[in-house]
Amino acid sequence: MRVGEALSAFTLIVAATLNFACAYILNLAWRLEVYYFVLISFGVSLLVGVLEPNLKRSIVFTYLSALLGAALALLVMLFPTLLFEPELLDPAITVGLSCISRLVILGFAVNLFGVLLGYFLGGT
Image (cartoon, rainbow, N blue to C red; front, side, top):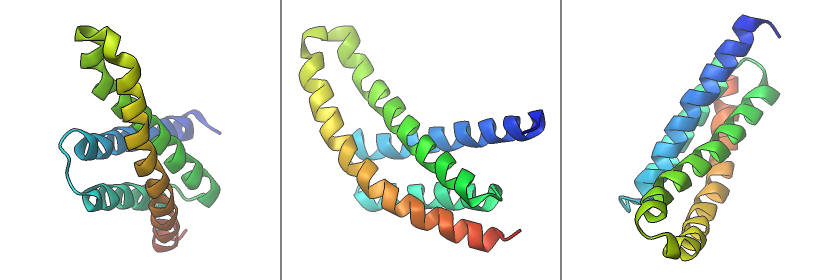
């Protein structure tokens, strides 16, 4: 892998991670309906599938970005608890993980469909 390819792959992963983190935060913090998360997740995975010509790499990039986005969203959601109420951190982690795990499971199915559709639409 050349330096230019590695840099574009890194940029793609970072951009997708931030988009996935925003989708998780929309659902967790603002309590928006789950179909907003599904639409954002599908759109991001579709773009990754279109932009990455290798199907295996695009699936890996999408799942890696979804997991990193979930971790980033959980960190952002737990940060105020960590600063102001450290004794409530353990219950907050439990609640956050239970909420985000359902979204991750749903997102994996949606992401696979989006990547496959993006790969076939992008066609090399």
